[in-house]
Length: 287
Image 1 (cartoon, rainbow, N blue to C red):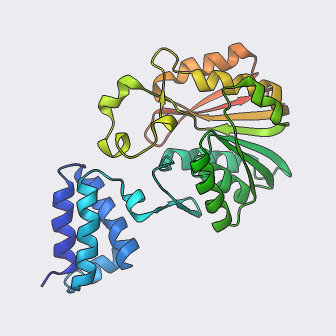
Image 2: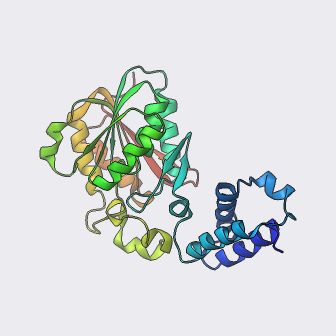
C-alpha cells in the first residue's frame, strides 16, 4: 500500500528531472492541496496514512503531465492571485508573484483615493484588473488583443464579484486610442521578453503559454512601453499615474524613455528578488 508521504516523495523525485528540488516540492504541495485537500500541516500529520487507489491514480495522471512540462496551474485549471481565485487556460499567461507585487504597490499607494478611473492594458486572465477593482474605490476598464483571453477574464471577473469593463483592442494601433477616455491610473504588464531570452526559459513556459503575450522584437524591446506611454500622455488625468511591470534588463532604458517623453517623476523599483521590475511614472511631480 502507498502512503501519502511515500507518494509525495516519489513524485517530487521524478519532477526534479525538470525542476529544482524546491520547485518540485512546491508544485506537488499545490497538487496535494487542490486535489486531495491536504495542506502542509495535513501532510505532516497524515504522512503515514494510506492513500486510496482512486486518489493515487488521479495524482499519477497529473504527475505524468507535469513531467512532460505542462504547468501545474493549467493542469489544475486555476491559480490564486492575492485574494482572487482565477481560472487559467492555454490562452493566457499564468500570473506571476511579481505581478502580485505590482498590484499590491498600486493598492497601497492609492487606497485613500475615491472614484479612481483605471485602465489595465493586456489584461490576460484579468488578474490585475480584478484585484484593483476589488481593492480600490474604482471603475476599471481592461483591454486585450486576444478575444479568447477576454472571454476567460470575464468569467474570472464574475467569479470574483469584480466589476470590470473588458474591451477587445490592439493598443499598438493609435487609431484605437480614440475609443478610450481619461484615466487616473494606467497599468500594464505587456510583452517584454526578447527572442534571444528563450534559451533561458523553462519548457513549461515556452510550450504552454501564449507567445503573443510574452515576446517582443529583438530590435524593439520597448515597443509596448513606447506606445503605451504615448497613449498615457493623452489619456491620463492631470495627476495621473502610469505603472509598468518591465524586463529587468531594460530598467534604466525604460526610465529614461519615460523622462524623455515628458513624465515629471519616474521611479524604478526592484522586485522581491532584487531585480528592476516596476516603474511608476507621474504626469506631474508630487507636491
